[in-house]
Amino acid sequence: MLKKYHKYFMLNKNILIAFAASIIISAIVAHILSEQADYLNTTYTLIVDYVIYFSTFGGLFYLDNRKKYLLESGKTDKSKLKHDLIKIITSLGIAEVVYTITRWFLQYYFLTIHYDAYLASIASQVISTIIYLVVINLSVKMTRLYKDGN
Picture 1 (cartoon, helix red, strand yellow):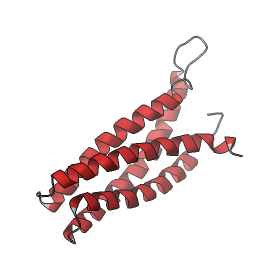
Picture 2 (cartoon, one colour; picture 1 turned 90 degrees about the vertical axis):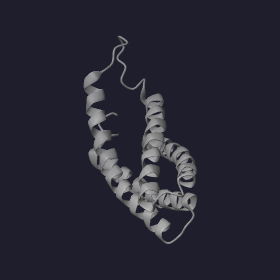
Picture 3 (cartoon, rainbow, N blue to C red; picture 1 turned 120 degrees about the vertical axis):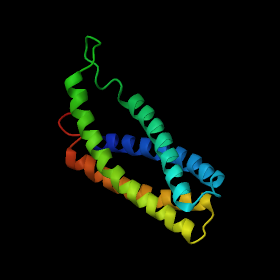
Picture 4 (cartoon, rainbow, N blue to C red; picture 1 turned 60 degrees about the vertical axis):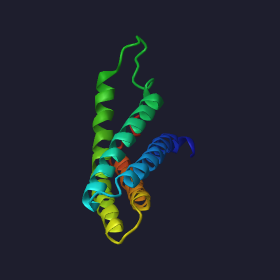
């Protein structure tokens, strides 16, 4: 049974590592920009969050899956790669919309009730990450990313 969920564990590991990196950097940026208007602090922090998250997640996801799309000839199985990319982008896209809306409004709310900027960033990101993980795992299951011999 553990082997059945190995790919889900690997995906979630990559997501959590990427979020850990982005939480730290986002909190620092939120603190540095704490003198900005609340909506600017929230927006800039979210931009930094995305840059760090996608850079880290993309690198880790590539490292975990780089051999999956190689044919015996050494060439890339482009049809399998394209098929899986559509599934992962669909799953990530749905989760990202939910994450972005939740994260932005929560951080803005926390800033308006006078949380320290770094604390507002961390709290909003932790709550949004939990929601994101639920949505992405449901989306991956619905798109059957890890079915059909993948």
